[in-house]
Image (cartoon, rainbow, N blue to C red; front, side, top):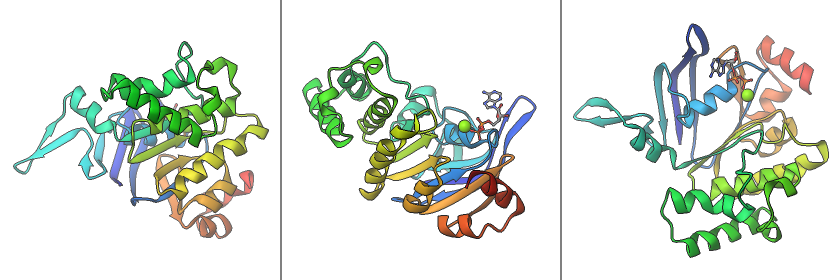
Length: 250
Ligand code: ADP
Ligand code: MG
């Protein structure tokens, strides 16, 4: 579902990703951990093509992101074609990023109607089904400010799912939440994983990584320092940098 090959990303002279190689299989849940500033968010943003990589190759669901291959040559895609590639990728951010002036239902229906041109009735039915799935059907008419952080994040997940993604990216989805609200969001993510969704999750929730993750990647300084089965990496880290990081967060 995702193949990253020697992915580099620089902002001016600052090289943030310094050759990332990894693969995410269909149905896999990959958790990404690492210190602040190690490039985790930048990597997710590159997968989602919110940022353009400066070197390397990145495939999502068999498509080379940002390019079209024809006759053995590569052509750069226009913005509208890139937007089409991005539609199969859902993203959930730390700060929810809901549209404040729209109801919960409006938030979930917006992209399917405006971007995918789904008929309103169909989008509405699907949105209500998704809200039920995240336990918020009764909040359909509420506005984001009337919800707790945990509820807002569950709406954000429903909103991403409304685009029927093949891949879901989560960037520290529980980091902005009060501790007592973390569990309800992780439960929704766990259900999603059990239903077979392919997920890449940047998180500090090591319990989630251990229980739900199929693989764990430790990033530091813009490279993958270590990766493997979560249990293995967490209990038996091989690299010094991984050990130092885990000793601080576990
Ligand atoms: P993480 O998510 O692991 O904390 P980030 O990917 O957010 O790390 O950031 C990695 C580095 O890239 C940081 O030094 C950050 O300041 C820098 N960075 C991220 N986005 C930009 C940008 N748009 N312009 C310049 N520097 C950036
Ligand atoms: Mg980040």
